[in-house]
Amino acid sequence: MSDHVHIVFDETAMVAAGRGNSMTSRLIHRANEDADWHLYAPACAVVEADRTRPGTAEHIASLPGIVILDLDLPAALGIASKDTWGAAHARYAAEPNAERPDGAYIATADPHRWAGRPVRVLDVNP
Image (cartoon, rainbow, N blue to C red; front, side, top):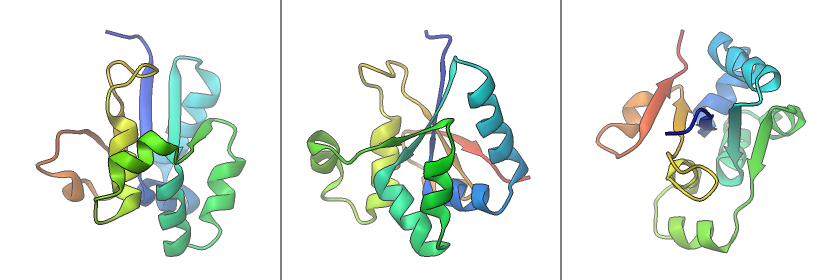
């Protein structure tokens, strides 16, 4: 078990961050202050967030505590058959891998969308 905390923002959490959501603000602050906390924004989810709330992509990309995860070939192959690439890329990013052996939590403002899926969810609603 790792001492590191890994959190993937889905598009709903990114939109919430752009609207001044207190929970996402605390997560971003914590990631800036604590080297053991890591926040991720999958590129496909960034696109979906920006479609929902224009300007979100620039806002998320400007935050030093958030790592933008590119859509590389393994990610593209992992999400290609899914309905919404934003959610699929977030789920793919939260799966265990070499960098995140325990996987990651998915921060979301819509926890019901993840019901029945094998992911750990962090509800960012107040």
